Image (cartoon, rainbow, N blue to C red):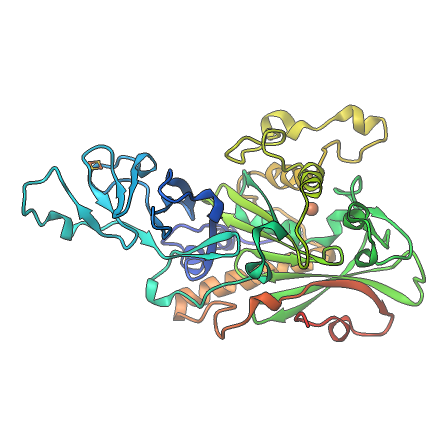
Length: 429
Ligand code: FES
Ligand SMILES: [Fe+2]
């Protein structure tokens, strides 16, 4: 459990909160590069409780500025996207990505008013298919953040996204909680003897087969410069007296998790605070050596319940929500064909996480041994936020530059008595 005060420290990300100041020291995903068309419509983005627009100028450069026109507040999502910046429809003011008003055509000739006007603008950077922003002081922006997929063409990368109607911390706590997969996801993740998942050839099977039916994993945490990694240790179906089945997940501060994927693939999830009540969830999968064909993309979207038009609207707002009990099918449950009654692995996650309320009351929970990584996550982030507020300490992961392209999760068998920390490297070869 947490005190109400600590829960606030963890969950609140406004500009004047400890976690908000911490979050603003990192590069965070804003949208995909493909969302921004050169000279096209500015895209409305809400990030850390701030209403912004992202756009791509006719020359291809990208910008992120406050949505409200600094003149009288008209939305710049309506603005004309011109060479010199975004031109507000109301009186023609032009704002650029450096936070400058460059034209105020309705003012008298020679007016110097525009020199005094300030509005928020943030540096952007494209990394692979993503656009990242750093919303803190420009001079403190960390080195560029590139994950492994940054070097791949868009054809090799699959991004699924949706809006979660709850706080970022309870979303990411789902991926730091290996034990729930045995219960919540028991429709989709099946025990399968012998094979380690990464040896499976068939993607569909590989995604969902696990060589263990042990529903009470032991968790072990190892601190890392970027955050921490943890192993979920389970008795395997085959040779349980010889081996332990190890599954390693990384928490990369502040909002990222990297976990095992089938052979030749890698995957991660991102949990970006829209505000304190909503989270932009990105599930990124990439294939290292080949493009992902259309049929595979389609299958993934359907299996995970992440298809626009089927599971959510074009703004990534899900059709299953609190009002309809996340479309839970009681008949399917009663017939014995489904444990959860909720189709799609991610949909199951959204349902349980949102069901806790917008911000879960952590004063009332009862944490057990299976919650070890969740506890470690909270400690890591609360401690980093409080130390930054207290003495300006370098946030976790930013003390020394690291190559995030090399971060590796892993899974497989470890002979009993061997330390998984030695068997599974912290970096890709
Ligand atoms: S409100 Fe934007 S120019 Fe007047
Ligand atoms: Fe889950």
